[in-house]
Image (cartoon, rainbow, N blue to C red; front, top):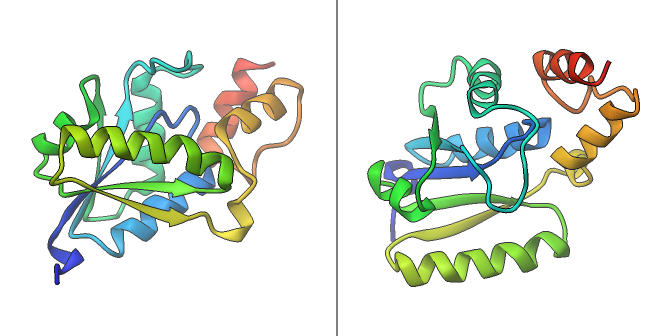
Length: 164
């Protein structure tokens, strides 16, 4: 039996923008693992990002400040290579609904093919965040809606600036 408190885990994502749901998953992972490396995808092959990688990193660092076992890094290589760079043995992903599972299941199988020693661990979204997505936050902000309770204050301010 493996002691999770001795394992490094990676929480990858675009975090465009980081939401309270992302932060919840990261903090919960930090309570399970020795170290959590939050991997900020520099350039997503699936979608264009609104915020720069540096902005996303800064918002995460500011929001997670004070956590001794959380580190935030930008990456632009295969996820499994990024995980190996940090000596990680687990990838942590959040799941909100069945629709998330289908995509995440495919990615987990591809990652297992590339790195059989790397486990994917899923944490279910807390009920208050089960509806929350970065794309939904951007759409609300774009049309002048209030996102203050969905994202950290600095992110809400930046979205208001971008969509003013």
